[in-house]
Image (cartoon, rainbow, N blue to C red; front, side, top):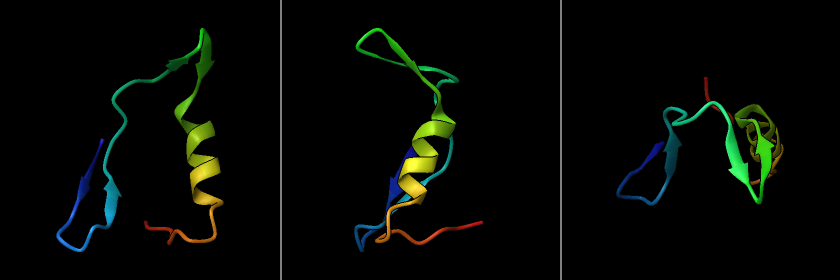
Length: 46
């Protein structure tokens, strides 16, 4: 879950589910977070 401000920046605020099903595969949110936070164009937040 997240918010987009007027400048178009996205802020992720929470997880909706503990496990996400993708094509019958179980994907854990921490796996997605690792990929997203490794992107060079993103700024980490606390």
